[in-house]
Structures are given as C-alpha cells and as structure tokens.
Length: 327
Image (cartoon, rainbow, N blue to C red; front, side, top):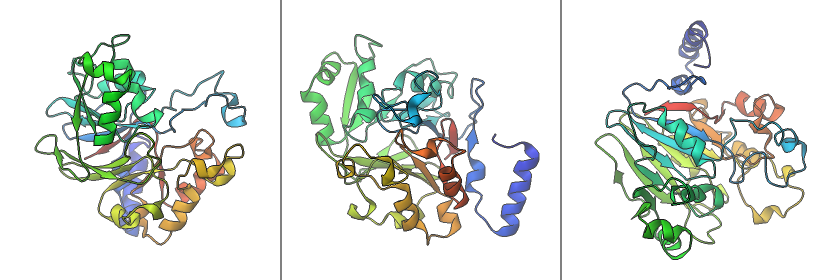
C-alpha cells in the first residue's frame, strides 16, 4: 500500500471525522515484488497512463523527454486497463497498446494460476495508434495467438477486416472479432458487465467509445479520449455521479504545452478545463476522478511537479501504473 498501517488508519479516521469520501482508500499500489496480491474480488489495474506515442516521445527535443531516452521510466506506458476476475481465473484488457508485451506480463501476475499469456478478451476504444496497434504482437511474427477475442465497434471491426496487417490476424485466426454496439450490455459473468458508449473524437478510421465497467459492488467510467466535454451529448458531471471511479482524458495540462502544432488538430479537454468544469462538484465526486492518458509534455507525469500538486490538492487523482481498484 502507499502508506503504512498507522498512516492508513489515521487517514481513515480523519476522513470519517471530517465526513470525507474514503473511495481512494480502497486503491492499492502494488509493490514491484511479484506476484501481486489480488484476493477474491474482481478488480481493475492501471497498466498504462500515457498518450498513444508514449514517453519518451519520438522526435521530442524538449526537457520532458531529454533524460528518458537515456534512462527510460518503467512506469510510463501507453494507456491501458486490466480487468481481473479471480473467481473465474480470467483477465481482460482495455486497449491494445504498443506497450502490450510488458502490460500483458504485468496483468498475468495478478492471476498466477492462469497459464494463458493472452487475455480472455480485449476491448478496443478506437483506431488511433496507442489503442489497437498492440494487436500486431498476436500475429505469426510474434506470439502466434489462437483466436484471442477482440471486442470492437462496427466501423472498427470493418477497419480491421479490410486493412492489413490486421486482416491477416483474422485470416490466420490469431484474433477473433466480436462486434459490439453503443450502449450494449456485455455480460462477462454473473458479476461483471461492460457497456460501450460513443464519444466525439477524431474518427478517421473508426468510432470512438468509452466504457462503463460494472462489478458486484463498484462501477467505473473509462474515457481515455474525447474531443471536448461540451461536444458530448451527455453531461460528464452527471455521469461521474453514477459511478465510483472515473478515468478521464488528461492529454494536456494546458494548451501552453503545444507550441509546435495546431492545437485544433489534437483536441482534448485540458486538465485546467476539466477542473474548471468540475470545480462545483462536491469533494466526494472529485475523489472519484483519476486523470489518465497524459501527453509526454504533461507535467502531471511527474508527481512532484507544481501542476500535480495543484491537481491533488483540489481532491483529484493522477493514475499510476499498478494502481488497483476493487470492484
């Protein structure tokens, strides 16, 4: 855990005394020792928190990446979630990233009795490079997987079927596509359901979806990519109130990070915009929010940065690899 037993008890007592939410106290950050302790309840684990191209970022000459080319940070991987079902000894992946090799190995440690290297299902959000290109490692040049189940929306399914090398994965039965629909209730077992929902994003090749993940006791909102909150037909603040945890797009802390590209070409809600929008939410609702999908320029990747401290002081959280959430 992040704190020792005494500090954990002290925080819980303080939260109880002040009437503050205790959701975040259920989050565990596993140590580097393996295998990880899972227990008998379904849970989600953060497998990555960085934007599609990772950190360090290709071609970056800024200070944010300068030292990382020489000394990479093992805790910076492209955004992905792992869903762990210990009762049925199954595991699921949300998005197939370029970092899938390390992420699948980490996910497997949470189910030490499972002999499978592949997940029991992969849920894709959309066709941008950080969210589906990890599928290439299931092919004949790498793992040579056998019909790994991939859940995808209709346009995403069509894109994979009609473009190589993805079509070869299908032809060779490395992956097996399962087409899903907006707001469809996908029942994984008696305790776990997944619901995809459309969100506005740059849909050059496919739709973009977020996911609601519902366990026996807790539910999660996962929206790693969206253009702007106001472009969505739903009210994000209202949606946050319906769940216990919300993993939300935090591509840029502010627009000041991007000085070499037209920011309109890469629309995302900045963290400053999101915090202004969520400012009137009560603390118990802010406590549900975990910012994720951070660009390599985002100072929140450094927990000691002034920007990170602002975010944390306001009652929000910043997603880190191995953070685990019991469902």
